[in-house]
Image 1 (cartoon, one colour):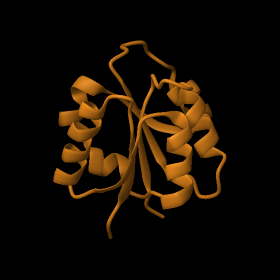
Image 2 (image 1 turned 120 degrees about the horizontal axis):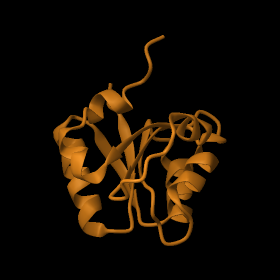
Image 3 (image 1 turned 90 degrees about the vertical axis):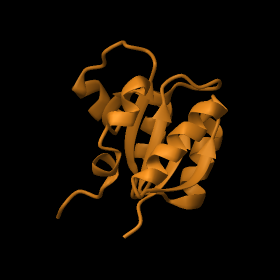
Image 4 (image 1 turned 45 degrees about the horizontal axis):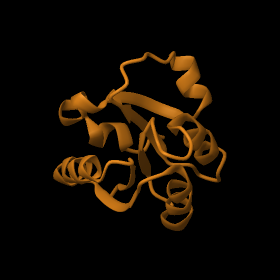
Length: 121
């Protein structure tokens, strides 16, 4: 089973790196978005299994995008990423529908496939 991912970040260089990392781990990037509005459109168009979502976007923040995506039918698993080292409580992440947070500098070592794999039933 192929796991489809949408990558959302305003930095094209980071999107390229993230896409390379995800692909190397056997995941398929079906779309890239540079802001919240295009991220919502990509999620609706592609119905991905996962969303790698930057916290800081030019139009709205990642938490707002996550809340909107989580309200959709059959939302994807959302992994928030940022260079911002601020800590969000797990409760705050849960309320926004976010599965986990990975700092951008830890993305290479993260178990991306595990984070985006469907929950066992």
